[in-house]
Length: 400
Ligand code: TRP
Ligand code: SF4
Image (tube, rainbow, N blue to C red; front, side):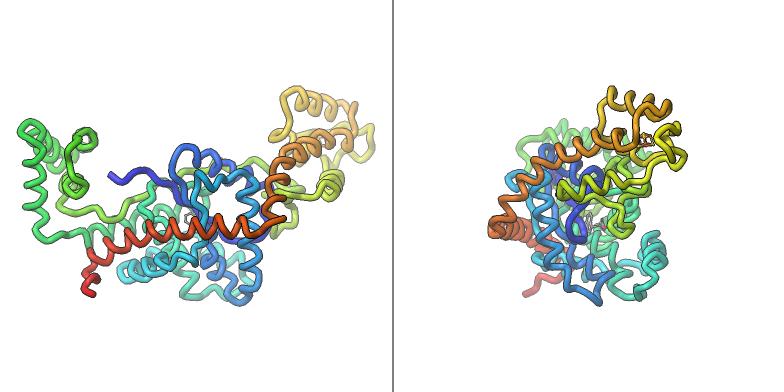
């Protein structure tokens, strides 16, 4: 009933690394050609863990936006904005907080996990507990149907669905809904109206999901139906509720196979990352000094690629003939590790060339980025305000 829309965000952590690129950005770049997309900097989310040192948020925000643009997020296809510039997110977060059980938030796995991982910080805060609810508001405020995230974020999307469902249940009552829905059924015309009622009964009495889908497909096909009637007919199918918020689906980003320099997951906090726009010299040094299979002490020692993080990079960056060359050369000690690393260096540099080039124009003229973001904030805000109007009305808050 609402058209598909993609929403996703990232906390501003400063310059992005190749893990972000292969893990999330490439996916966003593909999605922007398939759906309308909204991508935002989750600067309030950064505050939930770094409330004691907000000084880096500003520079990290702009740096990250440049990285997005440089990587290929196209502002003519995607809307780019900053969360805190759309204060409606906060209003919705507040309203949702009224009816969200504490237990839902406490049982989100990242809550306890992060408190343990970031044990140097006091995260027994109200804001941190509310992290997933703020995230729910980020998505629900656009009635987004698709949320591309990594698997660690799936519980957040699950909770978002529960929040939407609860909201629709609590506030989706419209005065005289039943009568209005029945009038809309009449307006479908005799044959369709009969089919609609039959399918609705089949779904409601026997839980026949196929009947539900068939009815929805039929409604999709009806031409001369007003938006509001369409909405009522959809709501009436599943109960006697109006659908105000949309339950989104997580779209899993295939977990990046790209390891860090030490073979562990690439992460800034492990100091094992390669920047998305790493300088040529420092990239070369980083790869040249990467650890390899510890069994290869001398050039003449044979190695096992499966014990070497460089091989993991080859798996992402090299074609099959280069991969063959590595496997064979390593296992027979016919190539040296420095030699083996060169094609990886070359491929990464080649991948980064257009990224660096695109970044340069934004670095030269930061007002370009500001203009793109100002435009994005304005667009996002309009959408958010539309939803907030419906939400306030549903909650009985539009009396002024
Ligand atoms: N929590 C997400 C992360 O750490 C960032 C985020 C905030 C987000 N709001 C969102 C992602 C809304 C998707 C949708 O990666
Ligand atoms: Fe690793 Fe290549 Fe050296 Fe083998 S030859 S240990 S794969 S760097």
